[in-house]
Image (tube, rainbow, N blue to C red; front, side, top):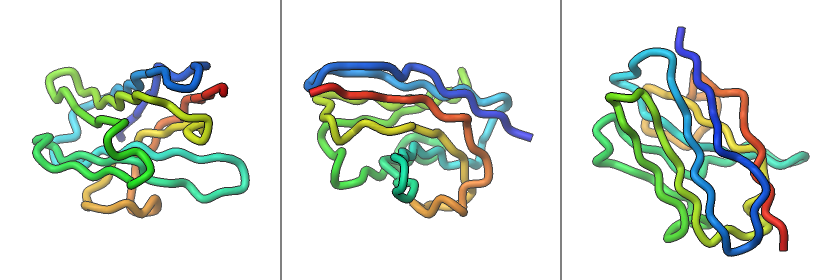
Length: 121
């Protein structure tokens, strides 16, 4: 069983930055790691995902050029650096692990508990 624990969320002004971290309980060698976000009443959205090697990444159009996903396999940790934050980035952010290259939430089989990110205008 893999446990994922997110940290780094909080309240920030528009234009500011936050770095989210997701620590895994054990190595996820073959897993692609993703960051999702969700606001009440909307579907969970994949904002980024990254291959085990880090050589392959995906970003949603809404965050391209502002967010960067990375991972440190020695620390069993994946990061999401968020710059130039906008109020519309406000959401609960989740990390997740999958054996597939996908943005589809139900194909991710491990999830963290989520961390709140609030961007004030």
